[in-house]
Image (spheres, rainbow, N blue to C red):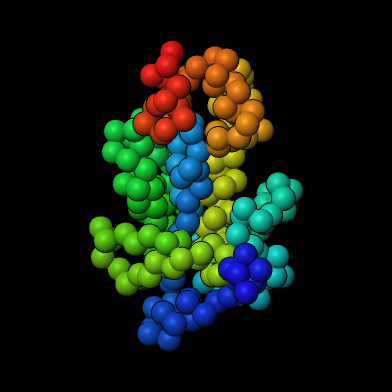
Length: 212
C-alpha cells in the first residue's frame, strides 16, 4: 500500500513518548518545489489532544481540498499544545539553495513553539543544528499525524502569503497556482518574464531569463 493510501498514525510520536519525551513536534514544509515565493515550514506539538474529533480528518495537506485545509488549520491552531511557522524568502533560496532554506524555515518554525519540543519528527529531513532527538521520515506527512498537522500549517500559511503576493503581482495569477510550475504559470512567465519574487536559480526561470 502506498503512503498516500494510508491514514496517518501516532506510532512515531508514541515511540518517543515511551522514552519519556512527551513533547514531540511534527515538522514539514510547503513550497519547496515552487518557482516563486518563499518556502514555509510548520511545526506542531499535539500533546494530549489525541482524542479531538478533527484528528480523524487529518491527512497530508496535498491530499486535502482548500476548505478542509482551512478548517483543519483552525482546529490545529485552537487545540494543539503548540504550533509555529517559519518563512524563508526566495532571495535566501537563490543565494543558499532550497535545502538549506528549507532547513532554516523548519528551524524558525520550531523556534516558535511554546512550550518547546523535546523531540522532533520531520518529513524526510533532519535538523542537525537542533540538539534534540529527532527522526526524518520519508512520506512523513502521509504517515505521521503530527507531521501531517505541520504540513497543513505550512500549506495554509504559504497559500495565504501567495494570495497576497498575487494581488501585488497580478500578471502571474499567483492565487491560482501559488507559484508552482503549472502550464498557466509558465505561460505567464513566457509573456511577462520573471518578477522580483521568482526564484532565479530554478531551471524554468533561469532558462527563461537567459533567453530574454
